[in-house]
Amino acid sequence: MSILIARDQGIASPALVPAEGDLARDHAGAALTIGLINNMPDAALKATERQFMKLLQAAAGPRRIRFHCFSLPSVKRSPEAKWHVDSEYCDLVDLKHQKFDGLIVTGAEPIAPDLDQEPYWRDLTELIDWARVNTRSTIWSCLAAHAAVLHLDRIERQRLPSKCHGIFDCEAVTGDPLTRDAPAPLKVSHSRLNEVTERDLAQAGYQVLTRSAQAGVDVFVRQYASRFVFFQGHPEYDALSLQREYLRDIGRYLAREREVYPALPVSYFDAATEEKLARFEKRAKHQRHPALTNDLPALTLRTDIAAGSAAAALFRNWLRYLGAEADAPLPAPLTSEPPVPR
Image (cartoon, rainbow, N blue to C red; front, side, top):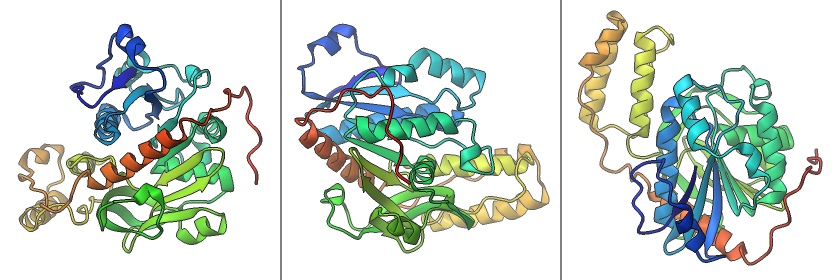
């Protein structure tokens, strides 16, 4: 998928592709080239495309963006999702034959007990090594962030006592340009079972930019030839993303695909909805059956979740960084990468 994103272009579909002539008419040097390596689970695949496209469009201002979608070929897909990737996405082989200003890499739903046992591990580590010297900056989101620091510095993620799931107030702890003019606090969606700790990151030389008293480290960075930006959370999530995940997990519980009933997302539903969902949980535990999903109550979100405000600030500043660096020539793509320092 290759798309030219401009401020006034509507994004009605993730498969909206301009004609080749439109791409050719774009003024040389006026656009940033950004790749999305979308490894999200099948159910979130298309939503993730839309979220990042709309986010980049809102953050870019007058600047145009050449946006290319990829996915690691070793991520297991359903036939329908595989067809979408095969027909709409660019081939990952083409990534290393082009020059990218920035990359955004998402995580994949884990299926192995350890990250380095995942079927996509080799593809992902090759991408990490390539991005270190062939992009101006790369964003690693959620599980991709955990995988990157494991590969780069052998920082092991730690299992949390319970899922970190909800909207969390995060504070900027440095004056980094990435958080300039960001709202205080930054309200960020987190949805994860594991974390990397601030102590481990600091010992390895990473700089923490934002943190939450409840959720821990949020955004952190490390400078290589490329500036690596890591998100433990999901600033790109739209207002309903956590709701969709929560309802998915309820469905899995009722279908006996998971044994533990999901906890409510933190600071997300309004008080009346939380009361209704608590009553539904008691009923679900006594009448566990997939058909019970038909009786789920209407859901209302809190009015103060500020969906998208954190992402708008972070990505606007990220694009400014890429634009300021654009005058400095990128090196030619490497055919092999230097070894990662240990």
